[in-house]
Image 1: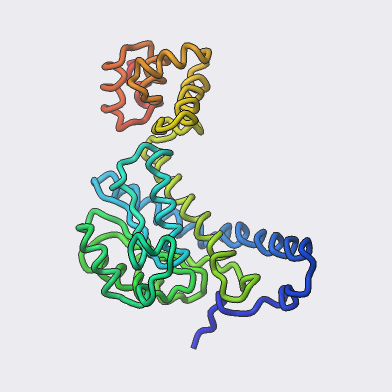
Image 2: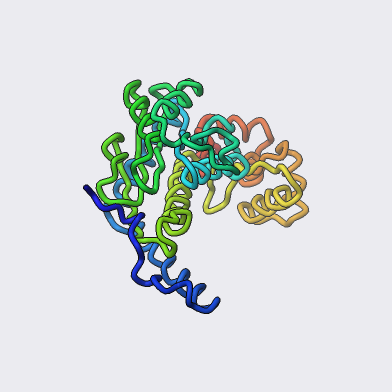
Length: 300
């Protein structure tokens, strides 16, 4: 039987209940610093590269990315998926997070939901999973039946699959084409994988979604040019993105924000390419939304 690191006791925190408040905080911080080091291992970055390239291929075929998990892992998947919409202007269908037990499991534990392989399969069936899609199963322990059921179904129908866990030789790794095992060591509080394991999962999901969106042309330089201006803060950010990408003053950026129908990407092409709205839109359509390529197209 394989001993799971996520369930082991941490020798550095055996007396944490007797520490002062500052000592506890210092200890937690010291443990957290091990997370990015674990993720930087070459084999993890290699598998991450394969996953991102497969996700991008799925997107280009009109497919979607599904995160599936239970508990903390499921919640992190839902969170990352939700944040893609305002950050990168994606359709809510493009990146989706599925959690064992459904929406109510975001705030309350749904007893037994994670133990059902059929549940993982049924949730993906309900979302009409196809062979164009990619499914990333997330389970800190690496053993969650809900995730295994989902991955097995995804493979059956020819969808891309990846597994993300925090244990060596994780069971879910055997049920996916690509596997990431980010072993961050025993938790400060034994078995509380919302801590280091959850942090590792959050960081890796950030890397997958952000890199995929960059590869789809949703970032220009380091600016989130497909941001959806859904509130006052994001309207202001959109105008500043236009300003930073073009060198115009804020008032001019605000003017083009409106002329572009509140689309920073279009506004940038209008200004830097010295063209009208429709010409900018057409150039972006020809180049699959990449601003640099659109500007080159206009200069031909």
